[in-house]
Image 1 (cartoon, one colour):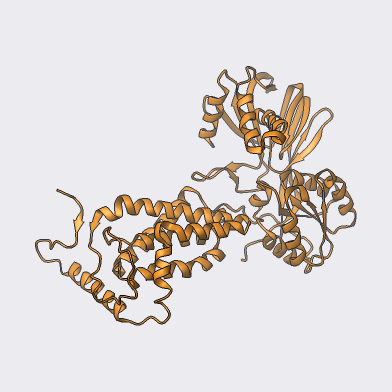
Image 2 (tube, rainbow, N blue to C red):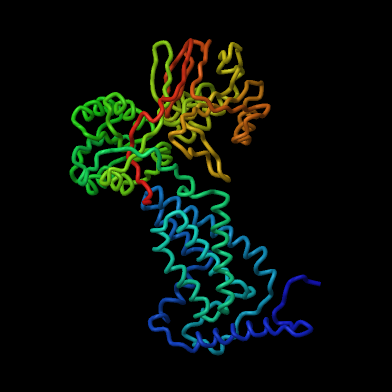
Length: 497
């Protein structure tokens, strides 16, 4: 006996409501079949076929990704993830739970009918679920792209009734399931808007209508040419200086001498250099992401030229904390993270091999070589006790994890250093994996975490590598880490009250 519900078999007893709903569904289908839809005969059947197996949506996602903006890429990925979940649900549960036959095609004009009729059950509509899931997923990440995709998704859903392969209720149920899948994906991986940092503490900054007084140094080694051109178009009064990576620091110093606002376009290392210059000269900083990860800009809420240009025109800015480290003959600041131990070693190995085998392959090889090393890469004195450690991670602000998404900072001015430690052992790979799985747990056999305003490490061996915002230097002896609360003014778009 099958537990599925078969709408073709009358159930014993009276079911007036169900019968009325099915009757209404059939009447609506017949009305749609009899109605002439101007221009639809040449469009909707083709559109319906193009959505088979999600081909239309994969092509749309590829076109969105080709735009090369972070928001468009994330929206495309979220749309495909939502579509995949909706399709999985339809194929494993939806089609099996209600065995409803397809509509009779007699009322549907032959010119509308698909050449190949589907043979699966009718309820719910898989095409409608995929269309709604993709459109809703895209809209949750980027309302602008959602507005572009929504009419196409609506047309695909309506084409299923127009071509006679689904009843209206099939389409509605499929669309509802698709939207639900998009929200389920958002629950697992929150959108960037859900975890945007609070717009505080607000501060005064120059409002530059055309960008006059803004000097932007762009690291052309990060592939920033397109962003630099877009910035010139958005703020024609701004001065944009493009330079090679080894010229960035010198150009930043020159720019600071003549700028009201110092701007930077590049990766996290370039932004770090700009932050140091802005601090020394007492200038507000305008950050345009131009690297691979762009942690600081994204946590700040600036993703593209539109975000930055709008904030600069309106003079919208906040103050953020800056982390600082001091050693015997080394001193520097960090906006994102600082680490000692495995990660700096991995960076060194990756740089050693990346020119020969590529960045990703070099990263994998570096990780294998570091984790197989039969030694503790770090031994420091904390609280008067020497401890072997595989990793000491320090974040400029507390990192939070929501769902399956990587950790992000909810507050860039919280006054805290987020210190995470992976204890030493003879099985470093297992320790590091356990620490990654532990996430925000403060106590585990492999991992410990604490939030402080200042940290002192002693007994650091000479030549110990220290990584900060993607850069690597060497330290020894005593290393002091501290916060500079609300030390830097940065532009960011602020929500309207």
